[in-house]
Amino acid sequence: MALNDITVYQTEDGFVVEFGGEGEDSIAVTLRSTPELTSENAVLRAKALLAAAIEPAHGDGARSKDPALLEEELEEGLEDSFPASDPVSVTSSSIPMRDPSAGR
Image (cartoon, rainbow, N blue to C red):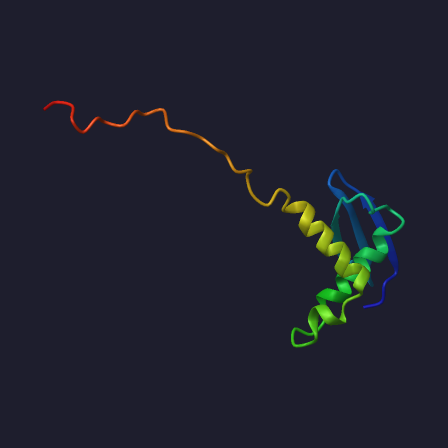
C-alpha cells in the first residue's frame, strides 16, 4: 500500500496519526500523551510503532528495537505503574485481649 498523505489529529489523550493509502484505505495509530510527545514527533513515533507491530514474532524482539524507543517504552511503563503498591500502613488493634482468669 502506497501512502498518499499523513494527518495528525490532537485528541484529549494525545495524538492520532493517520496514514492515508490508495482509495479510502488508511491506518491510524493512537499515541497516549507524554511530556516528550509533540505533533512534530508524533509521526516518527507512530512509524516506529507500526514497524514494531510488523516485526516477525520469531525475531530477536526487544534486541532489534531502537534503544531510544525501548527507553521511552520503559519510562511510560514505569509512569503508568507508579506507585507500584500502596504504602505500608502500621496499625494497632484496639480490641482488648480476653483475660483467661475472668469468669472463674
